[in-house]
Length: 99
Image 1 (cartoon, one colour):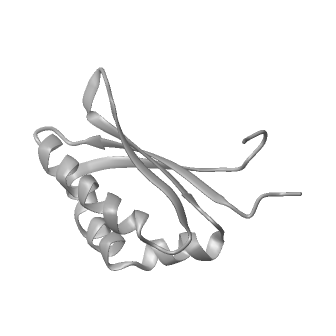
Image 2 (tube, one colour):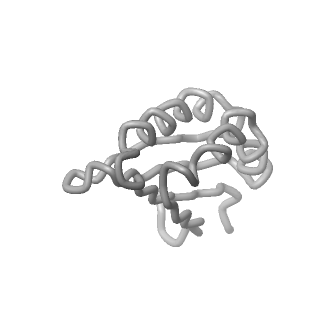
């Protein structure tokens, strides 16, 4: 049986000189995102050898929860700022063999 969970990994790389601002923006997303109904986890990581590169690891109970995240005020604020601060690449994932 296929999982209804929605898993997304996003690689976000700061533009030159924007590392601190990017980190602040990304940190401002963790609490509100984790508090959303249907959010199973929302974790922010930084690449050890590339301090301006971040990875967001997020999972939602279903497509409705993921869609609600994208319409939330904190996500809309993020969208309004992210392109000035960074490049980003989202990777929607499908479960193959998970626990």
